[in-house]
Image 1 (tube, rainbow, N blue to C red):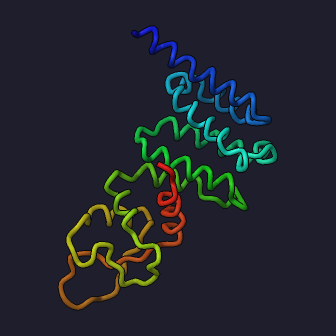
Image 2 (cartoon, rainbow, N blue to C red):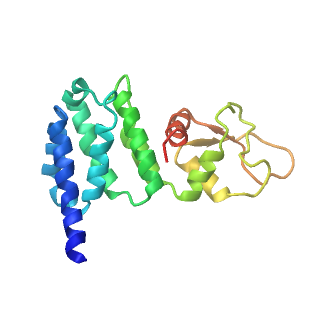
Image 3 (cartoon, rainbow, N blue to C red):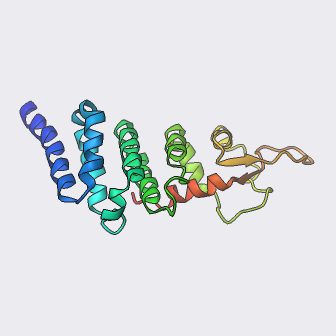
Length: 199
């Protein structure tokens, strides 16, 4: 039984190598990743395979021209390292969606890849549920995600501290059980990647 597990584990990296070598120019970014994270890739072979399969499964996004760009290769290596560390299956889906956004960005240099990845790493499952409940059509500062209810306040304040939401500092009359917030520009962009990710 242990031998079978080891064979499966070892074969994932071999398959990832074969996929990377079959996609022109991806082998440069993949080779950099293997050089930097060789031991980590051996331990997390299945995750490495998932990452390479994402590139293979999106040929319209990951074109040869894109794969040749040094800026893309740097982003690929950075994102792969963080992906290897991610434990949560849902977050891995969001992670891939963020990286697809990076690959399709008009300017990869201006795309906040590192900030998006860091922010995602700081969220727990309930924070993500609150994000799913946010109404992106709201642009005013009179927005309470769950109305004036004491519901998931810790998570709302976590989203404020991460810069996804801003707290409205205006004076209000009467007791308030929940903060009034508005969605930051960063938050709008970030939330879009979580709401459109494939499960």
